[in-house]
Image 1 (cartoon, one colour):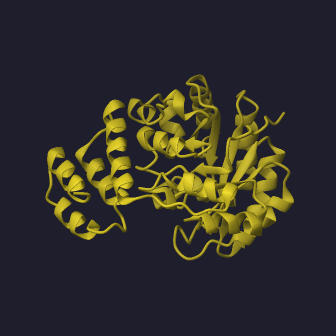
Image 2: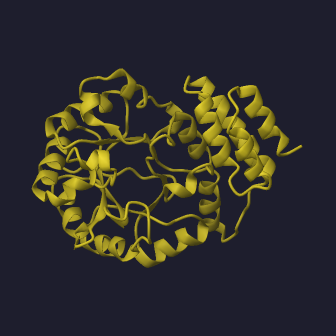
Length: 314
């Protein structure tokens, strides 16, 4: 029996993103109104072996709840074992990725490669959904350049026990280039009864409003638009509710960066490499960010990164 997708506090969800959606960043997004957050994409094969490095990426804080863990594999037994491990760790939702365009994952026969194997997807969804007590969701893409099959795959997921489905409206070949075809999201919404989560090319409040109007999707998942900008969730939610566009000041953006760093230290995930990349992400488009990026190149100590970031608002 299919488990119901939970009632969320808002219609805007954070997408899983490698090297981005760590525990510190997820907490920031949750604070600003992301109704559901997720780990980055994790290997079910590694989790089934209880690999410590991967399990560390699956740690979460109670303030994040509800929280989802996204996993990938083509091995049904490993997906099943991993899902049970994650359920026991307290995750609210397990999400299986059938759309990742990464060459490394495609070569394993996982992610987007599975869109060519509808029977395998049916087998995976049925086996996992019937073996856990929490909702199972699936993330897919439109299909392939010569075969757009999102509607067919979505129906298979629904029939076999998926509680919701996310569609990134690009083909596997497109990766993150070109334009997302939102019509595919609309077509899936018409074809299934479970909640549909639209994903692709939503970078601001107007994009979100337009996606809801054009697709009738139930929720929107924000990926690249949230990188270095957890405030986007507050912007979109406020606009959808009040019709007003709100902006974040330069000072507040820098403040958010330092809040992220404090959280990274609190949860023992701080590194100079991440502090530098997040400094670039959080200051993108700000006056002085080009100079900052150049100066960060040779920096090796946190005290120098801290000084450079503070200099932007002095």
